[in-house]
Amino acid sequence: MSSMFKSDGKFAVLLAYFKIIMTYRGMMIIHAIRLLLLPMVLASAWLSIEKTANNPYSDSDYLLYYLLVPVIMNLTDSRIVFKFSLAVKDGSLNRDLLKPFPPLMGYFLESIAGNSMQLFYLVPFTFIFWYFVSDRVMLGHLEPSLLLFFVAAIIIGGLARLMVSGAIALLSFWIEDVTTLNLILNGGIWALLGGMIVPVATFPDKIRYIAELLPYRYMLSFPIEIFSGRLSSPEIYRGFATAAFWIILFAIIMRVIWKTGLKTYTAYGG
Amino acid sequence: MSEQQHEYAICTRALNREFTVRLKAEGLIASLRNFFAPASRTVNAVNDLELLIRPGDIVGFLGPNGAGKTTTLKMLSGLLVPTSGSIEVLGYTPFNRDHAFLKSISLVMGQKQNLWWDLPPIETFAIHRRIYGLSDSEYNTRVKELIDMLEIADCLETQTRKLSLGQRMRCELAVSLLHQPQILFLDEPTIGLDILMQKKIREFLLDYHRRFKPTILLTSHYMDDVAALAQRVIVIDHGNKVFDGHLSDLTQKLHPEKIMSIVLNNGEFECKLADGCRLIHREGLHYRFLVNRSRVPEMAAKLYATGNIADLTIEDPPLEDLIGQLFTSGRQKPE
Image (tube, rainbow over all chains, first blue to last red; front, side, top):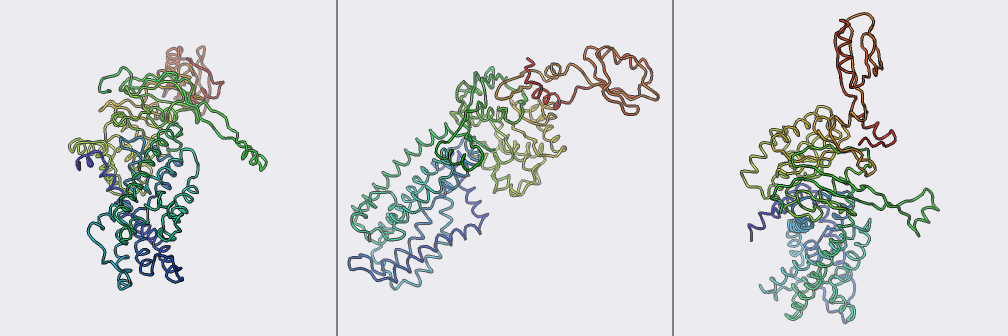
């Protein structure tokens, strides 16, 4: 299996992306600051306002939630929309199409490399933050199986985000600028229904039900809910099944768009 | 499928490619009208193109800007799907993009086609090796050969974006040839390079072709490239093939005269010109004549008979002039 992974160049391409990211250290730090800032602001806001009686989240819950939001956000991030639309516009997609290598695999590997590299600053950041709030956050419930589910949920969340983003990105074959569409579907709706602005568990019942059906919750809130010990085993399994459904559905959508899009691709530029 | 030897490396029949081009007239009203009812027209970039190229040939693919050369190369390499017609390259249908097909070709189009912009060329070579599944010995031998032939040893570890145009082009060629493609599509391989570098690239391509015999389809606006590399040329204009044949045939058909230049030892030129000869330039002891090809031996003999010739040269008119003539004088079809 590992030799297969090496022989057709995927490992070499993955390593190349790691090398590129390390070349642009400054860019990585700026990107990190951008992604760290907003959850910190939101955590402060939620801690400073008075909670309603039926809010299931205490200050301690909010602290843990927003301690983990930057971690999950960064580990499930995807830049495929920006990268792919640029590749269609400037013709650099041509390069990928001429290689005996799956063209979209590069974007997948780039996401893995980019997101893994975030751990370099996410780990120290999380421990520093943890040091200051450790007396207010309860972690006694954590078991190895829960941590395993947590890691699996991050991977599933990353895949879900990549697939939804990928489908939007592939619309670049027809739409000149997909970034606005991305801001709506993968920015605004993701922030709201994914649980960045408000934890999904604190939504009114009807909205929470919708959020649990859509893919966004699984890109951010779901792993945190698992880590917080707020979900029962059946809820965790149901969550994984829902996320898997969306991943498969968007993989099929991507395939259809890709095949159709290639026929209309005009291969402008060098 | 394509391990077998094909009679033609490239074979296209009735190949067409249309593009829809959006139109917009100048002004706010036109913009508003266009917003509600976008106007467009269909452009035939390639029209019923028939290409038959044998394995190992070098063919110059000529035409003015917008003639359809790059569109054809993109269809042949699988980037573009034809609107109609058939293409076979090494027995494959290019737009199916079989990995075996992609491993057999290379398209060089500018200096950003194959190199990873943010990494040094040596890293691109290593990635390329894995993607194309080259063995250690294949890789080591070919890298060494290409580094030597292209003289790129000193720039392999510099980030690609920081290399000069000439260095990038040579590295681009190296990476494109690392998997030893059977077909090489070269789109303006010397564009933007100085004369010395153009010459180096041409010499390299000739040497490479002599050693490995790939089929090469070359487009270039530099006629020196075409004259040095290609025996056969295909000329297209507005997507239509207007000439397919030997370079010398094109020259002969477009320009049935040769240019004869002489330098006298001294005095005035005193010689009766043969029929079909005319003086086109004179400066001091230097004279230039246009001489009908069939009259060249007769005229040369007459000139030498005067006993006053210090130097005599006979040449074809510059290829640039010929091609320019082909595209400006009523789109004539020399075939």
